[in-house]
Image (cartoon, rainbow, N blue to C red; front, side):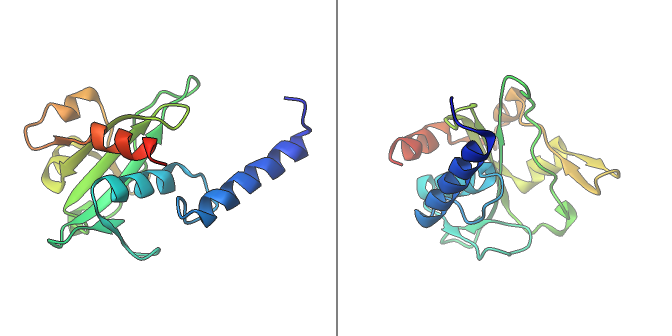
Length: 159
């Protein structure tokens, strides 16, 4: 690319502005979380919670609350550890939707995990004052975990 560093940063800002105007993202932070929320709510027919809602990102018609976490895997960082889950013991959400993106933002894997399974699979870290969950392949093997990769991939194709 023959752009200056400043030109590339301006292009990045333009991309974020355009994604925001299309309703894909709701902030101008790293777009991974917002893109995941957008895809999950479209694919699973959920309603997004108001922007600053504590402890969950979306809900369904039955009143179930969903925390949506995502990770973009890259060659430099292939970690599947999601961002910290706060106040897990307060059960703000009934299900966690975990999404793994490829480096190009394609949906690699996605699942819906009941909060009880999240508690079993996550580990508490005093250092970050929250729970850490790694979306290892073994998570999908649990009987109460629902694989939603295909619906999210289909939603991604419709973008």
